[in-house]
Image 1 (spheres, rainbow, N blue to C red):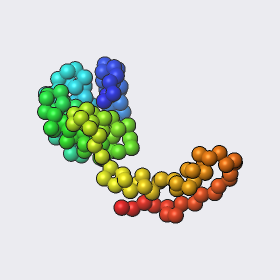
Image 2 (cartoon, rainbow, N blue to C red):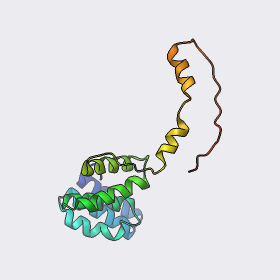
Image 3 (cartoon, rainbow, N blue to C red):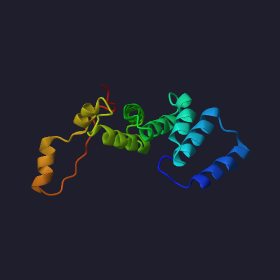
Image 4 (cartoon, one colour):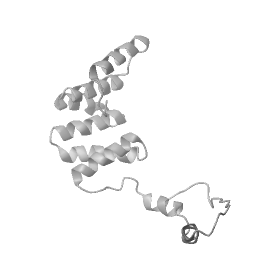
Length: 151
């Protein structure tokens, strides 16, 4: 629901699923909160999502969207930052980072050790120069120095 979609279809799917297994209280609140957001009722969405935002990423994201819709940009930014940091390489994390950037007006580093990761993944300058020079075809076998990265 965070990317849009047909609310009536989503409600029907949730109702059909509950025939087979009941939803947890958190899942029910998450769905109902997002349905409220899509119905332009951010205050109701906030009320439904807030109790579960600390333990449920979907609720946390919905709460941030509700806060933004209610004009509380500071709380919205905190929520988007938390979701982006917890899910930096997922669609939900990237989307949250984009929303955060729109609120604060600049890119925010969500992975605290991103520089270390980028540095470790960088190709040696000699290799890059060789590839640019067109020195012909080469077959290289590259082995990582380490199999894990730690900060």
